[in-house]
Length: 375
Image (cartoon, rainbow, N blue to C red; front, top):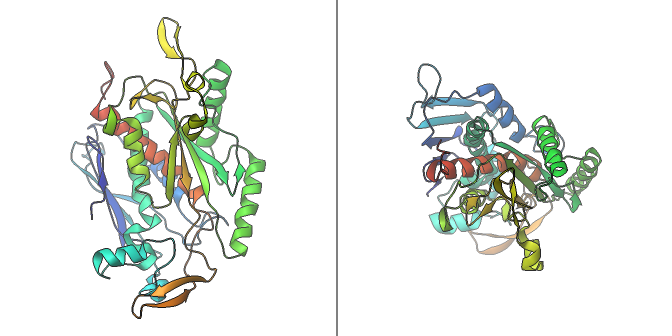
């Protein structure tokens, strides 16, 4: 079971939903960087459950404990950075009825087939959304490193249950749009609670989530993430490009069912004359006139905002009775899922998207720096 990713920045994830702890090991961090652990704690808190009626009631502190990788001045020292996040609110007994009855929408059955029934099925085991906590821990540190180089990253809920928030102003590059994008990023950086740009949209989304929860059901959503300040020339072609590195991490998250960059799937409905981003000269420098490419061409950064959107599926664990099978008897069985679950995963995926962006961009920068832009 390989649970690692990255080239120059390599991250290994360990733990299960109801194991005593989850965590990660990060290799390749530049030495001499002082991590702000108060800032990291604030970032982790955005992903944690128990925040409001839109999240699972399972509360974990998600406090990050460093096991190794810092020197006596609390700076990165070149050695692998090992992080552990202890779990204090586990209830594996909630899943006793799932030992032989797989949950629709989950990896229970395929894991049973792969490991001959020896997998840990409590809360999804290693497939659980709980494993996004160490992804956020690693990504929160990567985000700080990028911020030290002038790179800002923010995400928001672009859509929940078909209700859309305003979009980031990341495709138009005129001064007014870029000033508005800077304000949007600042707004999301200061955001506490439900992560939308429009408060009225937040109320409508919450109502839709609450209605689904009352009916024992769930809803999905779309998370939009943007990064600004990345210089041109970062990244590489084909399989190590910015899009490739980000997409690999994104699809390690079980709830992610799709990703698009820039104009994304709407580009398929354009003509080339519409989709192509013209070049221009501004203040003696070459730049793009718009940003339908989403911040990269050929896997290499263009110095325009990097923007992607993640499709997050509805939470698979729902309390409505569902049809399944009993693996012990090979007969049909009805399943009612117990436990504590989010009626919508998408709000807690917002900081995860930022972590994914940060990890992908930092790995690209360390692996394929631009001219005069080494880390």
